[in-house]
Image (cartoon, rainbow, N blue to C red):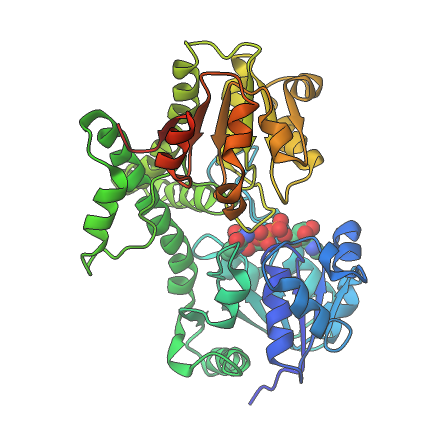
Length: 465
Ligand code: NAI
């Protein structure tokens, strides 16, 4: 029986950091070392003040404070940590390719391959290698090939253990997951490796929630889960547009269908569109994989989820322009929220970026307030699009740490993230300091429309006439 006493996790990002922190908390008998090439990120994880760790998640800094230095370590000494570990998690980024074959769709696996080569190069003992990153189905065979052919004779078992946490509720999700999925080989060694990982999770996850499958099913289940979740968002968003034409109300439609136990109430909230580092990337990857097997209809089906999401973001921006007498040139538009969802500082693929980009083409002047996102991040996100010179982004967009300042003298306010604090603002004060007519575009259907209208605002929500 393989007993794990030392774990190494390569990648100290939004997944590696929180996931390993919870494993360390729940398994004080296991030494967990999270490594990353990014020195700044590791320094931030090691900041004596745990409020400064690089990932904001409710409850995370408290758990880091409890486990760090006891059995949880953050380090840039990647080789050493791999070498001493019995089990190595790969939790590095797998973004959409920006070059070459599969550009804009396929997952870029160069960091995964680098990890596999590094593990093979430095390992002096047998190890279990766990895919924590989201990967295209059949990636494990490539990892196995690299480990077998470039290693120095050590034996490796490859497991797939995709992560299903949602940013914003990561600690809650890790403490009580709906399920943990572990895929591995059906050989005796494969089963033993799976059992070793099952035993780790069994320290706090009920055994019936730990599912074991073959490795390809496990890899594909993660892409499938994200595709289904995103598909629900695009389904409801597509109908929100129909509601706007027909005087049906999308929140009433969601409630009505959500009570059907076959459909269920979750993920049926209309919005400006989904963001985040995963949904789009994983669906594009699924589309690419289907096309690469010649499954044109399957690929087209899933691609539509992305098409509707892009449409929803553009439609939201166009509604701001249309309501502003068809021009936002020189007009101040206040953005409340920049993160892709509440309770995270992650802005990757946030709808706010694309709405801002569209409005900047129309020469709007945008002021952004987000409780957890820094100015440099906002500019970095816009610069990354390469739609215009960085100076133009800085000319067109200002970032402030005061929401009232953001809204002062604005023609319109756009709600881009569903932060709870927005509901508690002094909306009368905001109204008094805005230009009139004072428009609010609620991209998250967050605010109390009747209350705002009573103050004098004109409010446009998603999916109501
Ligand atoms: P991230 O970009 O926040 O973190 C990845 C980290 O890996 C970076 O800090 C990077 O410096 C490091 N890294 C890359 N190559 C390295 C190497 N060779 N050696 C050492 N460090 C290296 O990415 P995130 O969000 O944590 O995602 C990681 C994986 O987990 C992706 O495959 C993603 O699809 C998947 N995932 C992400 C979820 C999320 O909510 N962010 C949820 C579930 C899965």
